Amino acid sequence: MAPVMADISIKSCGQSGTGVIADKPFSAGEDILEFRGPKVRGDELDSRIHALEIGGGWFLGPSGLADDFVNHACDPNSAVFFEHSKVMLRALRDIAQGEEITFDYSLVMREDDTTFECCCGAKNCRGIIGPFSELPEDLKRQYARQKLVPTEIHGIQV
Ligand SMILES: [Zn+2]
Image (cartoon, rainbow, N blue to C red; front, side, top):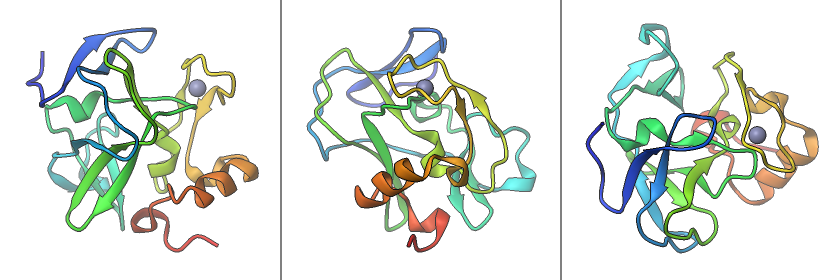
């Protein structure tokens, strides 16, 4: 079991095996955790698993902490935000204690040509998680309106 950050814990849950559970309620807009992995060039990564793309060919590798284990969902309750030198996971809506914390991986996938199978069970589940460029156009527009598409990764969105 990896070390735990404050207010969250790692548990086995659902079909995805490992996930991150809120140990307290989070309010919409509240920071949940910081991604703390080492900065690594994409071509130096052994695996994209547990690596977070941060733009310009750079990734944050595995930290060994809870931030490695946050699952994807097609109806996520959090998203990645860049704050100066920090990469934060922030609640998009109120999250109840005991709820699994998730974000949409496609929002932070540009160079990564990996795809994952999704079994999140959401009504709008896309089935396959791939790069942002392959999202349905209406979802791209919705995410852009919500300002959830990091310019650090994708450049300026039109
Ligand atoms: Zn899904």
